[in-house]
Length: 308
Image (tube, rainbow, N blue to C red; front, side, top):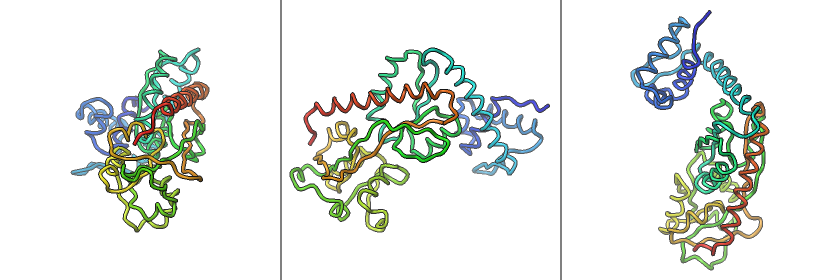
């Protein structure tokens, strides 16, 4: 009988994902020597090497790649056993790991977490903010319970629940206030500031402007909506941001905000989770909290005077 531990499998999975002993050790909250020792013991137990160790990087061996797939299946099943225990209780308790994309997290998370904490005081909420592709991967691997993203994601293994839609608005320098709102055709000729590659909001903006086939023209990339808005305030160009970000991002920038004529660009926000998750009913309840939080925030913003 091969005697390996779940701890060793978790350390192995972390090292396989990060490809670096230091980063894997940090992710596991242990020292690098302790992680190295556990990996070495696991390899000795299996009587084969799991990693090729180079001077600057490590990579999985052929056996290590096969082992990684099985190890993640085991870890996912173990996590789901804990989910089953939580699902059997009368109320929402324990750890909840939520992923959120960056164009939602700063604007909606505070309200969501506050409402969840007030309505379900037994919840221990862990938040992961990153791009959609990474959230889907971590959700599929069992490292997240659910994620709040722009839909659709079109992953057969995931449940998608649409929660609300929101429009995009045009942000341009303050001296442009009162000028006619550009059409999509006119917008294509302007200096358009976009989020960097990997953000779904970038793709949605390009789609609205019909710029997918015209990426050879000069486009300026930013790492966050805040950066884009500040660049607009400096007179570098114009940008689009989601409606939920307006009050936060425009309050300290010399910009004006305008709505597009129909058809207005928009996105649908929803929650996703694994179809096999034992927490399906609980996550459905949480999705309602997210929906209500968004509606509350929308009402509060509509009651404020417009930003300029």
